[in-house]
Amino acid sequence: MKKIFLVLISTVLIGFTASAQFVAKMEVKEDISGICDKNEVYALFPMMDGQDEAICPVSKDEILKRLNAEVKYLKDKPKYKDKGMIGLIINCKGELVKCEMDNETQSPELDKQIEEVFNSLGEWKAGKLNGKAVDSSRLFSFKIKKGVITFD
Image 1 (tube, rainbow, N blue to C red):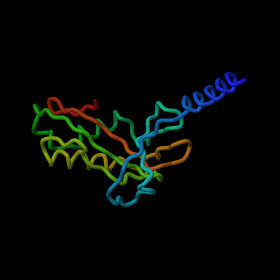
Image 2: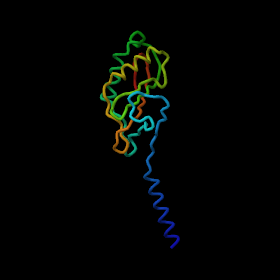
Image 3: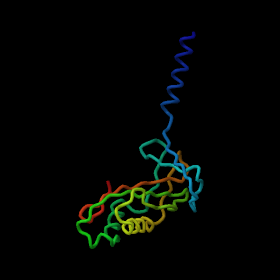
Image 4: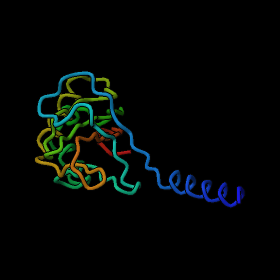
């Protein structure tokens, strides 16, 4: 009887562990205007059940097209090579509330122009955790080779 009970408890515990969901919560130390709940900001992973990352109103291809057309810094530098990463926080209403370079390029002017493009993309579809709209973060890593921006 003890063995059956032990096997039953083990099976239940394994079932709970297997269905546990990995959720990455960000620690937000600053006040961000427009955020819904600074204690509930998530980095969502769309490959995990119940997690849907925030969706940009335009495709990645369109973002690249706009970056390469609107970032004037690169127009006079056809051999420019660099890399960087931009971090975004989208609130539970789909509003972009923070946009800044996480991994800066060699030029503050270039960083500013890239941020301006991301800030002008429009209203996002909010990220969701288990069906509930939440504040979430998105990262876009990019390379610049021969003056052309591409995503990693």
